Length: 603
Image 1 (cartoon, helix red, strand yellow):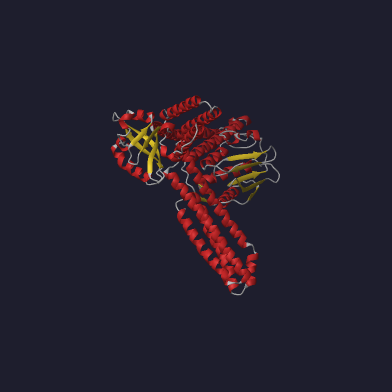
Image 2 (image 1 turned 90 degrees about the vertical axis):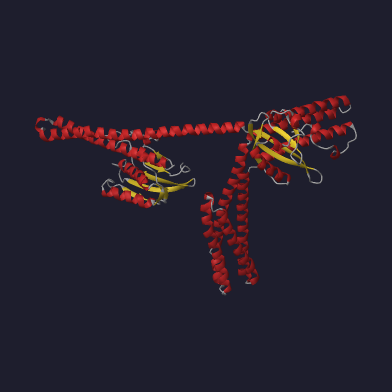
């Protein structure tokens, strides 16, 4: 920012105004324009980042090519319709030209978006959709050429052309939205990087403009008093000068050769020089680190030549020899002939940015240490689980064996109550064995590597149901399988999910007349939601979250067998796939368990 008295505006460029009122008003308006220009330059300069500019240009190019593709496709369709209506060959030229240009546009889009995974799927779908549309247009034209107008019109009347065109438009909209999001993301990244710089500059500029406007109002009201006007002008001038000199950013102005002609106190203090040591005596390149000078000179020449160089980082050398990095944003003021007259630059100390990066690096290092510690804990838990399994199985086998010996060899000494107690011991040791197996299964599923691949869900579920029927687990329950779209996931882990959900549904329909289990899916929020529905005893929804916790059971063991681990296994596997699982139910009305395999799905 520059004070009004030294704004760099030469007297020869300022119109001569008659009268104190006109001169004062013009001076204040020019000062406001300078402030607005400086503020706009700061905003504009810091908004230019090379990577963001490339991303935005790419987005504009893709969207432009999409628009041209639709226009050319519509041209081809218009030519086809004209030819069908009139049978004049003149309409074939727009049809043929449009068809050729559409294919050229499509090739260009494929090339532009080849490395872009976000729109790759849509582009792959767009190619056959356009080829189908062009084939439909060509087929009707060929039928007309062969004198088979009725056949050509019959094709048109099927409405196939409109359907194909709508599918092309839909895919174009999908790609266009993705490119628009990329454009917005690039702008947002730039804004976040320099947000605090913009904020400081905005506040200073707005305060200065507000003060100037207030001063203009006061001076216009009291223009009869020259002394009052001069006093107000002096006050505003000092305020502007103070704002320039004490700004949180460094400002300097250069001539066309890079010689320093003006510098604010903030920048001179950072550099450790007095103003009379640099102004008119040193070029800006003299103050840079030697290794940065060639690149800085090249950027300076490009800027003077009219190129937009955006914001750059450079290292200055203080008078005491120490260095510090800054962000520099520059603009060029030109005279009436267009020649560079002043190069103005704003620089911001990078110390805080570097401090933030150092903090992020320290946090990342700490996070890596915590991850390593967590891996050690997981390995220890794995060893512990296997140790517990081995240590628990040995006494269980002993208890089971001794109970069997008592029942086989000492049955004559036992009364009915003793035999019942032996059966209780046997049943509970078997249940303990199943519980150990389920806990180990839960532990293994949590640690097993997740290998994603295409999964034929219908085939997977059919196999699980067939296995259950062969083992007699279904107990006569009617199991129906609806539409199950394919998925991306780990087939082995997903098989555990279906086994546990189907077994759970069959178990809780025991004793229900006409027990049934329905397996199906639906689309929700762009995702596939799989479901297992039963008409069993159901559950109270206030306990819906507890059913997925380990050892949580809502019904006594005497009514329904189980270890309370099965649904915990389901939740663990689904969460590892990035999805969610939930239940909808009511007592006596059955239950439906839903799950998705991505974060979007779910109700």
